[in-house]
Each structure stands twice: as structure tokens, then as C-alpha cells.
Image (spheres, one colour):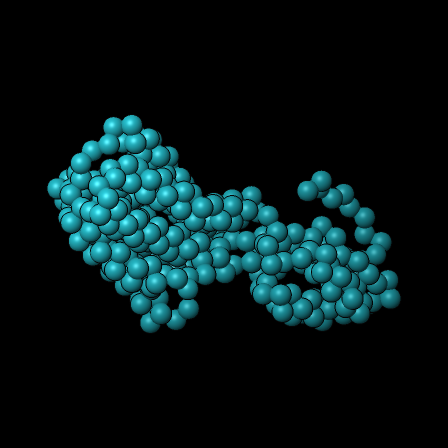
Length: 292
């Protein structure tokens, strides 16, 4: 990633952070004035967006730092942790919204539909534009930010629908119905992020990588007898790593091991794996392997 692109990405986070703060103030004011649970819930959700964007912005800058002696893999895991944290926050907020929706279903309150509608339209347009800025993000940090902003936009759309129903039919429980819909969307949208980030933290094999296919490809290279103790994992969204032991054919001279190693590195690069640790062994070498 070049410097110009880095600066542009960082500026996007900064702009989204500032605009979301303004939206929080507008929604909170509108929710109090209109006495609308749906709009207040949307405002609280936007508060979480401010925190999420702030953390995402920080993680985006932090992961660009070069590796150090203590952080030898760099800071790529930062965006994984922040992405997981932001997704979990969405679940917690969804649970709180469901509780509030149940309470207001039992005790409906009168709301100001026109104020709800105006505030919702403003928030819907703004959040949709911000969400689209992160729609093509291919790392966990941007994906979690996208879902925060998208659910915020959906929440605003829900508030707009609620305002329309209140204005036409005067059905007060619509606030609770819309709030439940927003909560369900928050859980659904963040589930994939929680699942994928946990896979990374547990150092599972990347979902687009087949260890069987890689092993077969490596063992098909002339001079390789077998591959064992093979592991592949994810450090960050664009950082795949692999380690394995390669036993050379008895007929392969030791002097050819470096040439063979280069061929294996090039083969793994075709899978998108550029950080590799390969231990070359002779056929008569015997050693114990860990259970994992």
C-alpha cells in the first residue's frame, strides 16, 4: 500500500469520525424532542459508531508501523482485535435495544412523527454515504466499520418508516417493532466478523487455503519425497504465513536443497503466501513431531 493510499484511507476514517459525532448530537436532540425510542436507540448506536470509528482509525494507523524486535510480526493483529471488539459491542447494544423495545411495547409513549422523519432522513443520507466509503474494505477493521455504519443507516431507515406509520395510523408500538428489527440486523451483520476474527485468533487455516492442495503441490515438486508438520495461519488481513518440514528424495543431493527451497517458495507465493518457514530434511532424519 503506497503512502498516498494510506493517507486517503486515514482521512476517510477521520471524516467518518467527525461526521458521526455530529449525527449523534442531531439524533439525540431529535429523539428527546420527539420522545422516540427508535430514534434514541439509533442515537445510542451512533455513539457506539463514534467509539468504533475512533478505535478503527487508531488501529488503521497502528498496523502501518513496521515490525520491531518485540513485535516481530508487526501490528497486523491490531485490526483483528479492534474488528472483534467492535462486532461484540454491536451484540451488546442489540441486547440492550431488545430490552428497551420490550419495555416500550408494554408501555407505549406518544412520539413526534415529523421530528423523527426529518432527523431520520438526514441520518440515513449521511450514514449511507459514509458506509459506501468502506464498502470495498477487505480487512476486518473496515468490514466492522462498514457494518456499524450500514446498521446505523438501516436504523435511520427504520425510524423513517416508524415516523410514517405513526403519522398515518398513530400506532405507537411501531417504535418497538423497528427497534427489534434494528437489533436483529446488528447481530446478523456482525456475526461473520466475529466468526472470522476468532478463526484468526485461534490460528485456524485461512478459509481460502487448502492444506491438502498445498501439500499435494509441494510433494509434486521434483526432489521432494514428502511434506509434513504443515501449518498455515493468518497474522493480519493481508498477511498469511506458513511453516512446514520438507523431506528430500534420497537421490537429491544436499547441494540442491537451496534451489529446491527457492522453487517451493515460488510455488507458495502463487497461493498468496509470502511469509514461509520451510525446514529441509534428508530422508534418514528422524525426529518427533508435536501433536498439533
